Image (cartoon, rainbow, N blue to C red; front, side, top):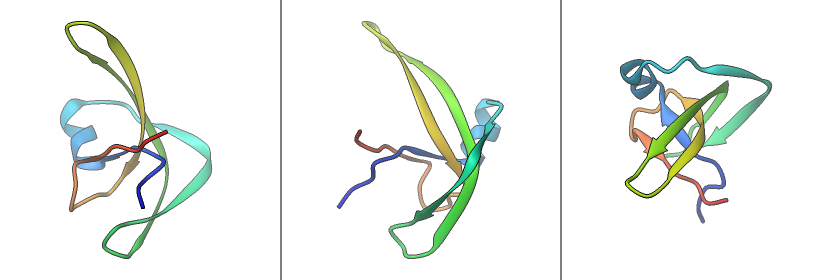
Amino acid sequence: MGTSHSFIAESIIQRIVVEPSETDAELSVCMPSGPFMTTKNKGRFVCSTSKVDFVLVDTILPLTEFDVILGLD
């Protein structure tokens, strides 16, 4: 089983100085280790490669086990 959303750790957001935006609805996420986390924060990032630029919209969570979790959509 995988994830349908992408997530990024709050600690990474602080390091790359991205201003999070708050959503209207709260998202509750079950982590692989078992506990649930809730958030209303998202971040928008533009990533560049040598051939293409793409935009990621990640949900921001207080992750400690991972820096980024990429979902498949």
